[in-house]
Amino acid sequence: MGATKTEIFTEKQNRLAAMMKALGHPARIAIVQQLLQTRTCICGDLVEELGLAQATISQHLKELKNVGLIKGTIDGTSVCYCIDEKVWNQYRTILNSFFVVYTEKNGCC
Amino acid sequence: MGATKTEIFTEKQNRLAAMMKALGHPARIAIVQQLLQTRTCICGDLVEELGLAQATISQHLKELKNVGLIKGTIDGTSVCYCIDEKVWNQYRTILNSFFVVYTEKNGCC
DNA sequence: CTGATCTATCGTAATATTACAATCATCATA
DNA sequence: TATGATGATTGTAATATTACGATAGATCAG
Image (cartoon, rainbow over all chains, first blue to last red; front, side, top):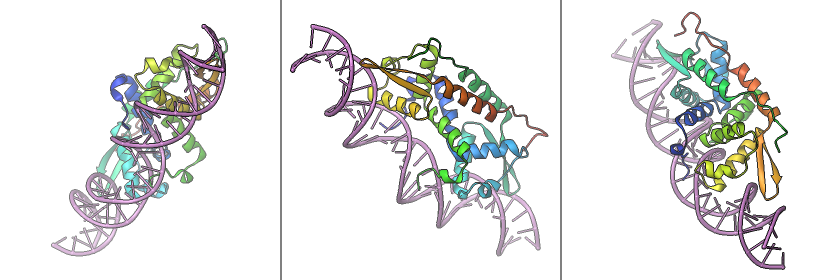
């Protein structure tokens, strides 16, 4: 046991969950917020901004890259990260249709 | 080590992350989808719908309850779960302002 | 080439998550 | 009261995540 049983869910459910999971850590929320704000991509300034070790930041960046939310390009000795516009907006759409307005008709429960 | 360092992040970042994390599992996505669809609250039918053990479902329900997304009311021998309209719509708003439209000005990277 | 800088990766420890069987608690009904 | 049904809790095993130091690889300045 211990591992998530992805086989029993739909492709969509698994992808939505993976995306949520990627943002399910404050450090990764902070990273994305930074990238959204300073639209000009940041590099390893993140290590100074957040109070985490370089190896840890690198690991978080990797996870965001894995779900496609960000992309990095090598720029000399440093790496330049930024939001992937396409994926970001795609996720935004998916989330919008998941998070529909909900009203408790005839007072459920 | 091993534990998330919540102290170094803002309240908002931690709450947003916690909320994403709660939905960061396909089973919990599936549960919420069920609750959204069959607006009349479901009980332990979830155990049959999803292919997971009763104890596992109960655990997932607990996590959704912890972040306030769902609430359960005892109804005889069974428990009636449903989306918490207030919290749900609140989260929807928060997510909307987080997931802003993003356009790569002057082609970042 | 050498040293400095930046980032990724490896190894590892601590902790958290996922899943299930077994059991407990509660309520409904015979 | 006893029995059955339902859901929560406990205990436990397998796996994943988080964090960091140390190290490796790549690139720039000199």
